[in-house]
Image 1 (cartoon, one colour):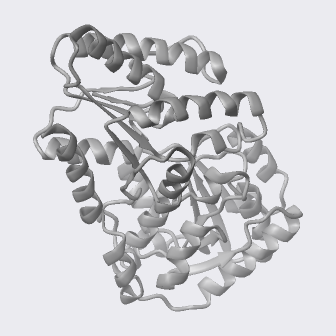
Image 2 (image 1 turned 180 degrees about the vertical axis):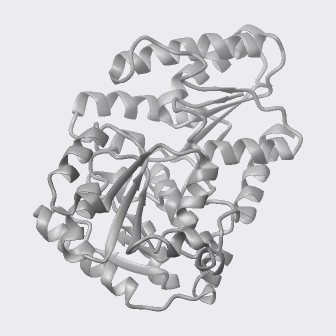
Length: 366
């Protein structure tokens, strides 16, 4: 049974894991926030209510003897999953039902709570207490695995958050008539419109990029604020907000981009060590990218030469926007070919990553 606090329709990492497990013959039952709606939408009340209902829901599955593995996606579902598994183990005296935690990020270090000591303490306490009790631990990059190893002494399997090979290639994109019919180069930001994601930098950068237009695909806490911010600009007609898109539409939009933008401010360790899903998606689609100078994402771009790196440290908004614009100019000045992405595609291959996922599951269920 797989638990996630997001909406499964747009959580591509969880969707990929479910597909792999089902292809391997597993029956996967999922539970997300739309399956167990709670009165509160955010904050501690949401997490408390969600985990309580999650515990009750999973407990029913465990008691019915239909569940062999409980899979907690991220720290914010771990408590409810653990309570259900622990209760069954105490009552039955067995350890048959396994508990897996899949950490998509350093949850206590996300920007929304990094400056809230009490909230951070709660999540860290949950991790310190419960992660060593899991039968398997998975995360998205080696930096996060190393962090948890040092902090709690736990070993984690790294299954990178990569897109499959379903994106159109650069050559296919060049043949798409829809691309040629649009004016200007397409800069694509895809993901949450939240604090520290650099959407405002991208909007401001258009001042120095008169031949470019920006497409922002996604929603988030700052979506309306960013729409209002863009509307104030003289170049507002070159900014488009699509809202949240289904995966197949996101693949099509990615194929039409000229430059992919993956920007994070260094606002805590979660962002610092992030390896966003979009990195792999742009590689698979043959779209050069501009990324922040943070360890995991910058390593990909510098190692394989698939774009440019900007300074992601805090500074004036104008400085950040100008740095972004200069990086975009460097990318657009180069003629990109299919072979430019070959080495990165070979490394960032979901077919390799999913083998590690299945091996991890096999190790705890045999």
